[in-house]
Length: 167
Image 1 (cartoon, rainbow, N blue to C red):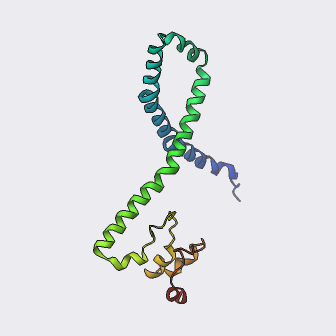
Image 2: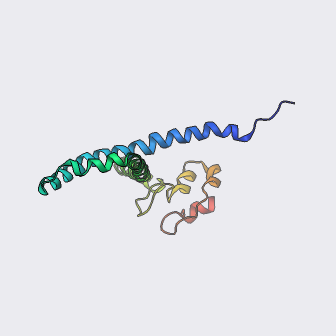
Image 3: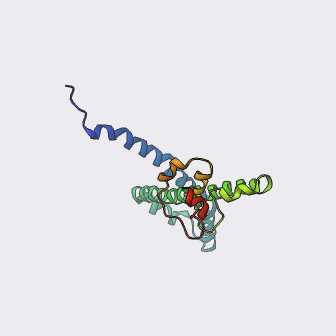
């Protein structure tokens, strides 16, 4: 009988994958936001403030030279936080734009199809969509309804009575 691998050995590739995803999906976009914000807003503001106070960079540079490690840690933390906020907000915005384009096309070509489309344009209708159960049922995918575990919303997630009877 072959010896079993320790469970933690299988976790190493997953951990590396998560680290790479965090680096490229969160930290680097966050750093880019901070970088462009820094040179687009902060540096010009400091230059104007130094010019108005008749000072020069010699008052600021020694602080950063003495605190290089602290500055690097602060930049990394702020990059991660900025990237995380960007990552959380972006998919919902893109999803909404996409869903609205589909609804616009459906209104022009197949107006009856809007009733069974998952996105309803109701405030707060994000993935998973309010009308998703009805969408599955109307397309003959009733065998997947057990996967939709969220409770129907009284404003739009509950399918009509005729559909509920068939479910």
